[in-house]
Length: 75
Image (cartoon, rainbow, N blue to C red; front, side, top):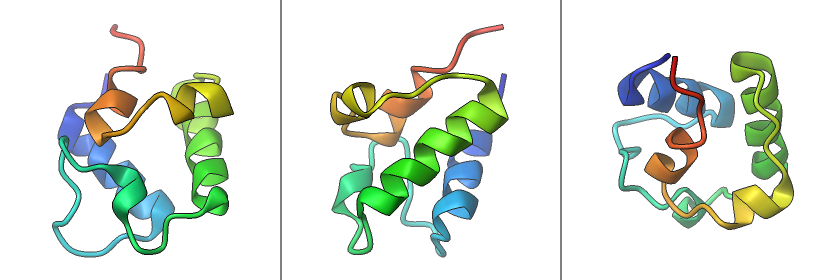
């Protein structure tokens, strides 16, 4: 399983976020470029990287990067 730091790096890459603004306690929806397209990108990332189905309902119930990370299966 990825560490939280590896997970954050994958999110940054997927959403094309630069800088060190993304942390475990960051509310990912607060980014100025957050859109429904970003939500779809996260859903696709979860499927391809982790083989986890992330639905819109599940995503709506998450607010921070840590919440997303907690959805990953532990190995």
